[in-house]
Length: 400
Image (tube, rainbow, N blue to C red; front, side):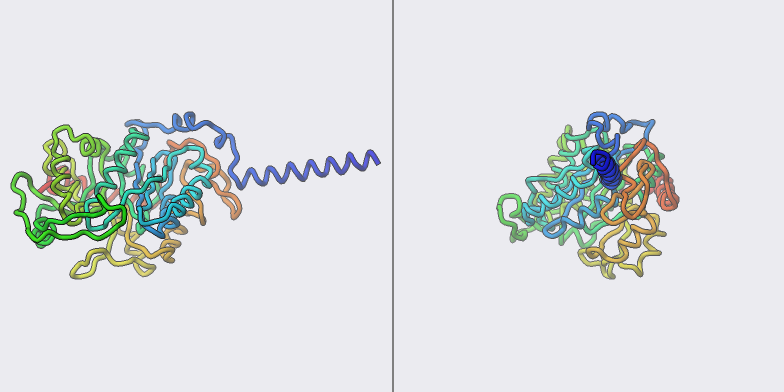
């Protein structure tokens, strides 16, 4: 009887050990996982000798939590910093759910480089509360991690067209004070319909969101500074964002006060600040690196992309594309063919060392996060960047 008990105990122990090893493999329990946040943060190399790092601000509204999480996984890398924001029109339950999804990812738990805004900013699409939220995000990202190189704005309706390894590889050859911002001083119809009207954004002072309202009078076009307009989607240098937040020569604050009463200030604020600043106006590359298709004449937003746009989209040499319906099949095509990303998993890169299978996430274990392995999309973006920088060096695409 004693021998039988010993045999059963040995069998039970073997089964239990096998089961725990299985759980370890699918949960990502590794030596890396148990390392402290400080040690992991120190493993992220910063400076000219290392690949650049990006601070992502990903925003959305009510019902966008799942889309924000999917986008986060598509652009995630331990080297970067992320701030996720669901506007005040969403419930606290949706924010808690997003925070729970974020914590479910082993690498994010270990590196601690993703934050969810707990007290949301009100967002009125046409009003100045939108640009206030972007500036707030930049200030938060500068406070939690001042070592990143570029600030990227994305919405829940966006998606990447390359891996983060691709992005690191291409931007390694770019001066880190360069700003990618689509801009023009040719205001056209916007002068009379966007710049001269005086509007008030109730989102700045009312707890409940309402639309902007117009004053009866219009104001003259400014002559103390030159107004520039362009795409609201930007890739801005840390140096320029620090200038906008600190505003040591007061220009950013002056323009913020003026555009507080303008329509869609996110399409004019950063553009006007950078092009009126002696320090930064020669750092502008005239592109937002986004792929979009517009109606003719263009409406407020670009057309929604789908599977029929896939080939043209991935050949465009853009870094990101917009806009997409939730879980559109074309996003699955990007995941499968470009990002190599499984469902509810981060897009793998050279940092992922785990075994890839249907039950194991390769990014639940990791090695050197400073190693980069670019793919085919890096070449396309590289060609775009090279062309843009050639124009930039001749000052043909700067503030004019």
